[in-house]
Image 1: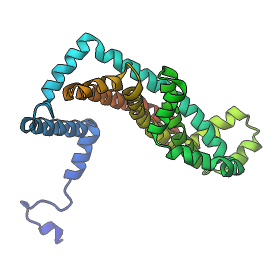
Image 2: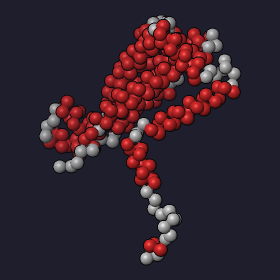
Image 3: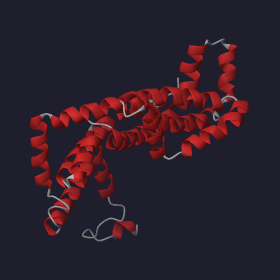
Image 4: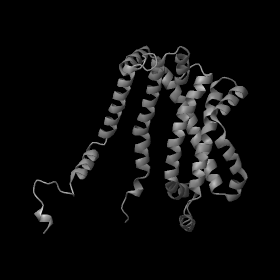
Length: 276
């Protein structure tokens, strides 16, 4: 009865505003990210107006330079070369690292023997690996891709090794009772349980691959985004550096939103299906 005596002009304690806000976010999932990026762009614009133009160019100066680089074909050419290196190194590292991780996680003796090797490789500085590959194999494409791959494999292997150790032995027994073959067992028993670890390795490994490819190109290649950034750095051209950096970031974010996220949702759809 006391609750009914509340004056009509006073707001209810249990307001439906949070629920309305949540519904708005559900209907427009890109609203908050767009607002956040707009705020970041505004901060950049204001900061560039009070800073030296050679130290931090304005967003419109960067956009104008990006249009010039795109019309000349240089931006797409060097960006495409970098993406090709990322794709090759990433795919090789995922395949090799996954095989190593599952092998070590499923065999305790092998993990004891080769686990220290994996730890050493994981803590090896990327710059050291890049320099060694260039010294041993020369300043060529093979050395560049190999350096990126070798830096990526330990990250994938560690993630998959820990995931393999968490596999449910009861499901393994069921697979044995039904006499699943290797591929059937891998597809229906092992990979669904390893999916969170695989996607974690994909995201962290892809981010690492993006960055290491730029370092590889910065040091020893004559094309690619890293090469262009090195050229602009020597000329103290911050606008050019930002053009290629932002183009690279845009492609990485687009790949995450258009490829990785939908593919992950598709692979994990069985978790959302009701039990029958």
